[in-house]
Image (cartoon, rainbow, N blue to C red; front, side, top):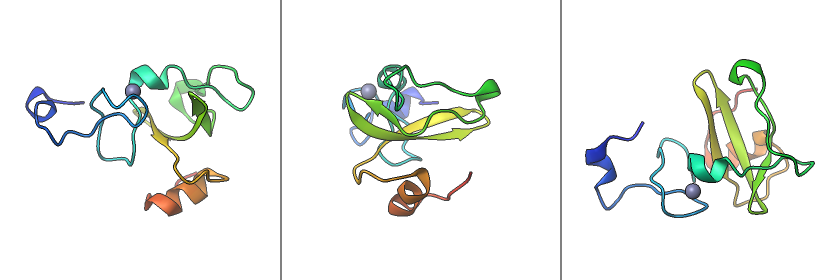
Length: 101
Ligand SMILES: [Zn+2]
């Protein structure tokens, strides 16, 4: 959720793919929902989310760039991977994120 006052500030964090849409800054290099909607999986099919938002495809690719999704109870956050990590565990370690299965 992004409130208007915060979005108006110059130091707002923007989407790592399009560079336009403001995104949540609690996660590194987050991707906006509009770009996330273009995400593909390993098989070049639209990235899928499991039942009730529990898990789903990882990694995903947006415009050919590897991204990882953090799946939680409220949905997911997609983050751009700058290190070409082999798995989500490595991505978490490189980015200082707590790793959860
Ligand atoms: Zn975007």
